[in-house]
Image 1 (tube, rainbow, N blue to C red):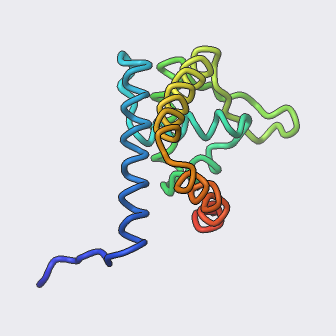
Image 2: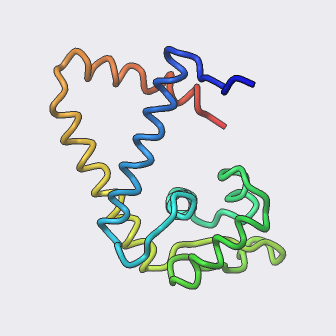
Length: 147
């Protein structure tokens, strides 16, 4: 049976760019907090909770595309590292909300600042035409990758 081959063209390039961006984020996370050795899914959880404070376990699982038990195991590890807390939602006694701890917030701010600084350096190296093309493409990319 022949191996599956990805289509040439735009889908292939988009996939490669997404993979490259994940490597960049993980490299910067490793530099910012080498003692933690965050996995890509753990970093995605932290980033999601950073952007959506008070989110639920169900929302995290949906964002990662995993089942609740899998997301729960990852969150337990992040909580053991002192990065995330689970607290009762003040609006609903039955719902737990996820929040970054002070340590988690510091780490995410540092990692995000490092990633954004690296991207800014690369953007500054672009000629005005390609940079403008990229800026015009962002809304279409947001639509393409929206949940």
